[in-house]
Length: 218
Image (cartoon, rainbow, N blue to C red; front, side, top):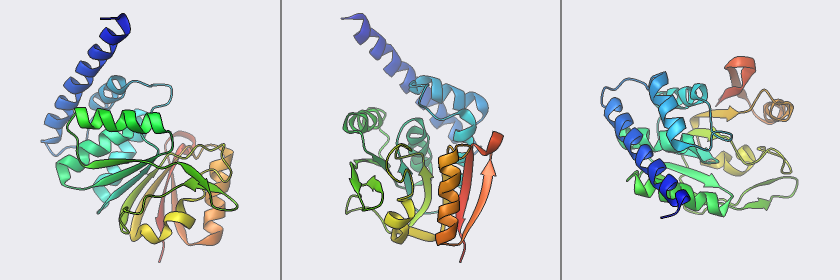
């Protein structure tokens, strides 16, 4: 066996061990502590692109404060957390991922861990005229109660703008949204643009407002 194959096997074993510990911890009904979140991130790897422990904390908080199916734009360590919580609390989640190889990888990891409550959808980016966004599968629900918005990449035309124009009819009126990277100029401009088109409540979170919670206002 090559050294790379041995490393992948060790990483897989470590991830399964950590997932088992987190499953056990969730039986206590308590939110994950810093230790559990850090272990989850380290076991997942891909550190340069993964969410922070603080961001995972906000994802879990929003999960516990919302109802119904969950939409994740982008996939990674947060998908693992959502999958564990959805398993525990009998909810379903869909993750849109535009990169085919990464989509397959995340799906394979969830399958290996027997986490069955998240559907990872390969959703290529397509043009909607003035912006690009995911090509949405026809089978997604029309009552998402929570959205984790960490994609698509900010460098595409329109960045993450397409969430409301494309998915608005799929969002429950009480939907809670967590938008990542809102310390960046593009995401700040995006929020102002959304606010100019609909009534939104916004709450910056974390150091320098690194993420923002949004809610539809009736």
